[in-house]
Length: 219
Picture 1 (cartoon, helix red, strand yellow):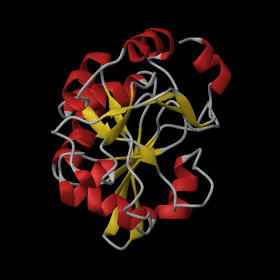
Picture 2: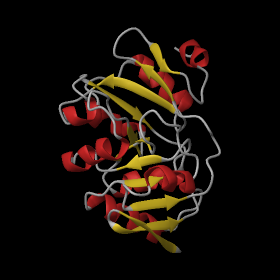
Picture 3: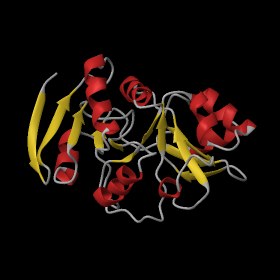
Picture 4: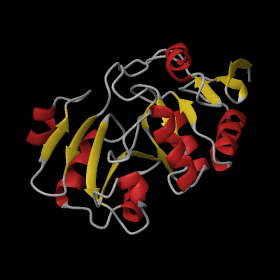
């Protein structure tokens, strides 16, 4: 479990080297401890690198906004270990959700649904909706499971700047702001997830790794 250290405002950041396809249980436990302790951790996902934190810890969520220099009027998407987790996060699961989840999950499709009462306004940005995704990354799903099933998954970059495709890019953009970085190599998918909104008439909010037309044609 190689760990390197890089100087940042916390003193020395820990950079943990992992295999994103076959992560060791000890590595998952280590990162889960960081997150349960309230830290924001830069991690590799199945798309670009993301910022993982406990979405039910309001201090951790506030730290994400600080790290990204992000407006608090923008919601934060969530990564889940299983599609069944949506029952806790969304107030309803429309038929369109079931169709899309069965076809594109695990994978790079984020689905926006009406939020349940469990989700704070810090995550929804007062929109009343929640964006969720089950990633294809074995590491991220296992990590989410280790911390209760749900992680934040917003991209690990300064708002308005390009998404990071490697740990070294995260270090260049955010290395002075995050205490822990997980290095899982270079992103295989170089685009963020596609986002589809199902809170009303289905519509594509962001074109990403999956063509929006393919998503809408699946409904």
